[in-house]
Each structure stands twice: as C-alpha cells, then as structure tokens.
Length: 263
Ligand code: MN
Image (cartoon, rainbow, N blue to C red):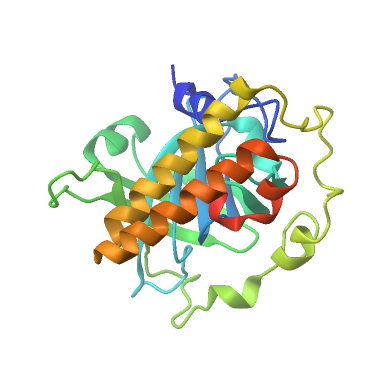
C-alpha cells in the first residue's frame, strides 16, 4: 500500500500531520512545502494515484534552466498533506517548521505512469510561484549502497524561465503570507487547526521510537565523523540526549535540536 512508509515513520498521537489515507478522484494538484527540519529543504509533491508523490529538494526548485536541483524521492504522502502548515513537534519524524510555499495544478506532458517508469517525468506547473515546463529525471545509482532515490528537477526554457532565480527572495507562505520564522514562532498556526492535539509522551513503550530515531541519527553522525575522538564525542552526546529524552520527554526533548530527525 502506497502510504505504508508514511504511516510507519510517524506516531499520529504525537504529530499534527494528517493520517495516512488514500484519496479518491484524479485531481492533479501540486504543493511545495518549505521545511526546516534538521536541514532546510523544500518538499516537492505531485498528486498522483490518490497520494502525493514526494521529493525532498535541498536547494528548492528554481526557475533558472541552468539549475539542476537534486531531488531525493521520499515516501508518498497523503493528499490531505496538501495544506499542512505548522510545526511538527520535536522528537517526531521531520520535526520542525513547515510552510506551504507554493500550490497549484500540474499537467503531465505524456503518459504519467510510463514517464514515472522511465524516470523521465515531464510536466507543466500552474502555481502561484512556479509556472511553466519542468522535468524530473531519475538518475542511475552510481554509488554503491545508493538507494536509487536521486532525481534532478530542471526547469525548461519557456516564457516563465528566470535566469538567476533566487528562491530566498520568496520566503512567504501562499496560504498565510507568513515567513518561515513567523510560522516557527506561532505555535497556534491559524492555517493548521488539528482536532487531534499532540499529546504528551506517556509510558516507556512510547519512547521506543524516540530511542530508535536517536540511534539512527547517531549512526549517521558516527559515519560522517572521520576521527575516532569525534565518534566518541558524538556517541557520548547522543547517550546523554537519550537519557534526558527518556527521563523528561516533554521538557528536554523540545529544547534539544539534536533530536530532530531528517525528513
Ligand atoms: Mn520534508
């Protein structure tokens, strides 16, 4: 099922994100979300087959045809994620601030499934910020151990291209006009009223996922750290973090950005 991974990665008692539900009907909307998680990135999502096919684009989309933006395909998201703007609480998958950066409709330039299968998806966007023809090109995995999730997002030359496009000049939500900082400082986001309030962490079993995500982050950190002293320091820091997180999840976890997992 298309949303299994989305479901597996999240605790819906903890996150205000929408539940995994397949949508009916074949609308073709798209959304770009600006997401400050452990690293700032943009999530590019196309509505397809009742889900949002999703790519994380570290530098964000560009209207400059000279830019070839790396786009890592991530798990399908439910269509209701379309207007999700607000804060994913610390300790949860993708913890951080989410802005609805652009919305609109998209038109495939050919057979969608055929283009997806070939890894050469051509489409036209009609958004508020992004317009015109684009392509998502699946790159062949060269590195050993590569997951094969790397694509390139490229703008084609047309009436909408903008050489020298600077995405930082467009730091505002198309839903609420707020900047990412404004959204981050506004816990009671007007754009996102969830009836399912994120509850506080309870019994020890609920902390299992947290310990797991810390362990994962720690492993990544250890891999990235070349010196043995660095590894040791990272591991000690992570152990301290785990201890604190498990003993006082509501307090320490919120303040500790090291716990934020990538999404
Ligand atoms: Mn993201």
